[in-house]
Image 1: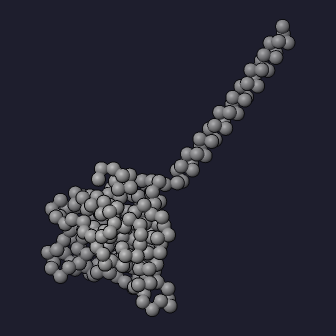
Image 2: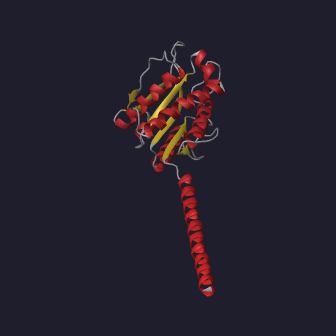
Image 3: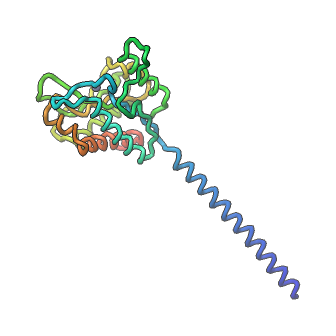
Length: 235
Ligand SMILES: [Zn+2]
């Protein structure tokens, strides 16, 4: 009798230990799985801050170079997207151009290097950030351009245009526009748009585009559009 109850206790202890080991193992598996899930963002986005280094892009009516505005907005956009399930590839993260010392046509070499990064990225979407300029000072408002032959590009551009209008300037009547000439649209295959965030030739917009708070607003409008597009909703 006594021996039986000792055996029973030993039996319980063994079953208990086996269960404990199973719980620990399961916990470890779930932890590893969730860590891996956390490390693998769902979408890949390329952000291309236009110009850089020896190429300033447009010069604003307030003397601010386009390349600086492009990079500031792009870095904000990177941060927002990385917090929202995106892996972000940047064509540049500082004030530089992407040509080699021996390249004869530095502008084309820079653009080719960007296209190569885009084509190698497997991106779900590519966002090239630029600022516009025009001879008439009154021209203003963000506008998105897409590859004329790309239906996905048009879809992304329309979503982004809507977000930019509602997020920055509801009076902006510009619509997303097809383009067949831009070097980067012609030499890439991924879904890509060029976002002209505003006109540096318009004094009010140039002033806004130079402010960190407005740059953040632009980045948020673009990020909301990108996330809406990649998640396939509400177009
Ligand atoms: Zn530009």
